[in-house]
Amino acid sequence: MLGTQTLHAVGYARGIQMDQRRWPSRLSGDEAVIVYFGDGAASEGDTSEAMSWAAVDRLPMVFFCQNNQWAISTPVSRQARVGLHRRAEGFGMPGVLVDGNDVVAVHAVTRAAADRARSGGGPTFIEAYTYRLGGHSTADDPSRYRGAEEVQRWRAHDPIVRLRRHLDACGLLGQAFTDEVERAADELAQHVRTAVPTLPDPAAEHIHRHVIADSGDWPDRGPARRPERRW
Ligand SMILES: Cc1ncc(C[n+]2csc(CCOP(=O)(O)OP(=O)(O)O)c2C)c(N)n1
Ligand SMILES: [Mg+2]
Image (cartoon, rainbow, N blue to C red; front, top):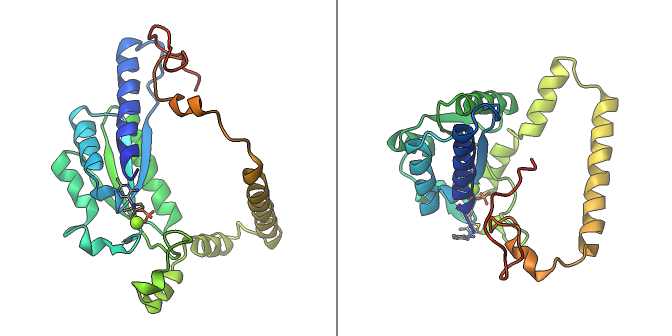
């Protein structure tokens, strides 16, 4: 379900805030939540509710919107009249626009927003402006709704290539290291492709795990109690 994670994040951040108020000496106060979602998810009502609630309660969280300009075949121009980050002010939190293809800049704004959240400053909305080079899924054929020149233009800004060039120019990246990263990535991808189809099906009752607060089995569950924090 598109956008629901923003409300899950609000719930988690609210939990952090309540724990800190209840046990100020036991918790260090350095926890915060970051939630990632797309430009399409930003159009969902859930996202607006989450932003409203987070701002009003000054929750320790960061809204990170990856604006890749497409929600399947719907361009962002059909979803918003103004930059998505400008919505933030209306909800009562700062909105930051960052070049989503600049890894260093994205890291810097994310760190600043996370620090602000941890120190009680409340939520921040980050709009990382980027582009979806591929299709939405393997069932999607983007050539049906957008031109090849647009894709080519954005391919030239590929953030991985850009970061690699930057690190190379700084003398921080040798060929041996690059080769090793590529080999390890290929190996991991191969492992995922072969291992995932062999995983056993989860038991039906697992659908309730991490959803219902008590640890008893559904539907015949025991009295509600606060679960242990294990993370
Ligand atoms: C509530 C809801 N409405 C519609 C959909 C159908 N849907 C799946 S993905 C998608 C577009 C997602 O766009 P975006 O958030 O920009 O993510 P991206 O694919 O660009 O990462 C839509 C409309 C859904 N999954 N859930
Ligand atoms: Mg998108």
